[in-house]
Image (cartoon, rainbow, N blue to C red; front, top):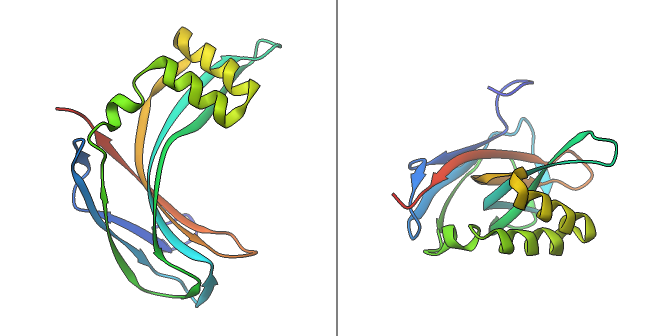
Length: 159
């Protein structure tokens, strides 16, 4: 149940613990109250890192940065109401090595955020970085209205 009634979008996964090379199998279910014209429906495997640093005034700033994004289109421009969309996403076999290096993280943050990312990357090297948080994210892109989206956390580990 959502904050304002039943969930409009539901992400169902076959399991929540995965290893590199596994396939995430699941479905995205829509449960809209009335038909909505949308640009697209996507599902993505996302990896986010929470970075923290102190600004020039000494205040602690926290920011989530997407370090991995593999998006799969489920449907294009269409009228949506109540449908179920199955999906499969193969997890790269080297996904955990891709984001374990501090130097790689610093380069990624700099590429995404410019000078601020370079600063955040340096701060992350001094311990201001959390682990990668993995999630499956479904998104219905509705033009000129609030998008409908849902995120389901998962674990990806080598053991």
